[in-house]
Amino acid sequence: MNVRAVSRVVHWALLVFALLTVVSGLGITEFRTVTELTFGLLNKATANRLHLWCWIPFVVLLVAHVLLTARPGWFRRGR
Image 1 (tube, rainbow, N blue to C red):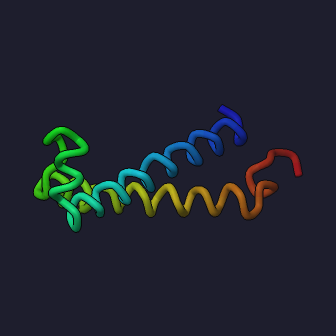
Image 2: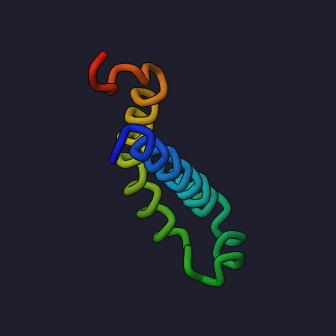
């Protein structure tokens, strides 16, 4: 995979984890509404577990995103 393909995968994965973090955070604070909207799939305990699990991949992807977009020339060969 080239740098552009890796960058696209990192960007989309970061978006997914950002949305998961927001939805799970809402699932913790507004658990009755989120439980009804997800048809019982995401209750308060599950949202808390998901929220605690998501922060490590989110931070790793955020760092990768910053490194890949701040200086794209760092990862090019031959320069």
